[in-house]
Length: 419
Image (cartoon, rainbow, N blue to C red; front, side):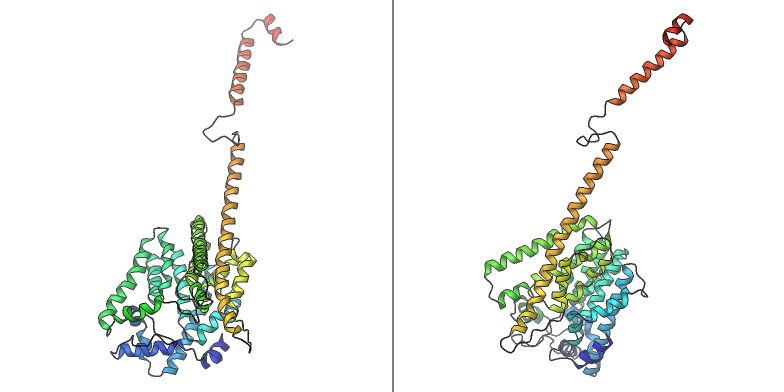
């Protein structure tokens, strides 16, 4: 991580997300129009809403762009390390255990972390927000969990599907704060900006378009490879159905194993968003790291080899250099959606297997209990009872009558009882 921050990230590349954000925030602080870019160009654009602009505006106060960029990179690196440490503690391990340093080392080698820091992106802070939301939700700190999720939604609206987690458990404080904070921040920011309506007239139409470059979503791949419309629709519906099935089946463990439920459901929801939205970036995979911490549990989708094949596809920084044709761009772009799709399919199949095994175990346990209670397996608890007990009662009463008759009989009669 230190080498990544000090050398590749500090040097940077031609893709520089921070400079675009810094200049837009400087325009906001100077009272200029924020959304004044030409969105037909392929250069990085400022796409944050007015509420996010106000929240990020302190970044524009720095006088030196280079110093501000380096500070932002360090902040994201520290946020990633803090998130990994929080995940280590969340799964019951000490920070002195081997889990924490190995996770930092492994994360530093992924394409997601490398691109986040080299491109000076905000995903490191969003990763920390995601893990903090999970931890607060599991500890029933509902108001704070909603605040953290609300901050993430303001910056990146694709976090909104995570509202399903508190919704299915009727944790209303988390929902209220997670929805209220984005609404309030945009209402506050609206009068503070010059021509804020340009966000809806300029930025929103651009976001609704599917671009055919640097887009790892299913729609982006469909446009780039000229996929037939019918095939695109079938693939879209198949992935959406798998996400829905996984979410529904995982509800079985929302009370019995909440940590597994929160992490796995969040992963499948975010993977679905990356695939089915209009824009997907490979470094979004940083937000899928929590799933692989579940490998230390007795039940985890990370125990299956397909999950690790998917992880290889969207985590490893593959290079396919070729001077003959643009194979490198094709392969580096395709691996991310293939990995996300494979992860969704793997989670769906694995959790269905868990559910079927749990159902068979419940039926087997019911049969064992009914046999122990003297009830036939095909009978219910309210069905016919075993008829041996009344027979034993009758025999016991007959024996008691014989003893009473024998006690009151004469000696001659008693000999009949003792042949």
